[in-house]
Amino acid sequence: MRVMLAVHLHEGAERVVAEGVRWAERLSATLDLAFVDEYQYNLYLVDDPGVRGVLDEQWSRVHDEAKAKLEALVATVPEGVRGEARFLEGRAAEQIVEAGSGVDAILIGTHGRKGMAHFLLGSVAEKVVRMSAVPVIVLPMGSPPA
Image (cartoon, rainbow, N blue to C red):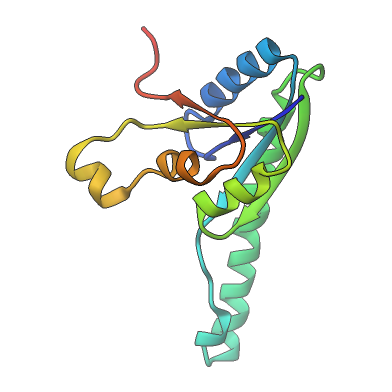
């Protein structure tokens, strides 16, 4: 069995991965970690070659740092369940669903936003649940346990 955990690379990512590891171990599954870079950088919009060079270099550095963070998270997964890192680009929900089509289940954390925050920011987890053809396990990732 193979499961995929969608992760952010922000503070607290280790806690999400630890929860994903617990689920993978319960399911006797291999755990892949997937990160989606949603930011768009359109180099063609910049006319000045000097500015383009600087922006391109910075964008490359940001991507390299994100990939390194993802690899570091994968390294925290015990070898018995460790799968692969998936660095995806595009709209989060769509990319997670597409990448998840080749696994047995998708694990995804949720902030549990309600009201106006949910309305304005939406819920990637909710979209993944609605669009996925494979089972989705939603992990409530509110405040850490005391």
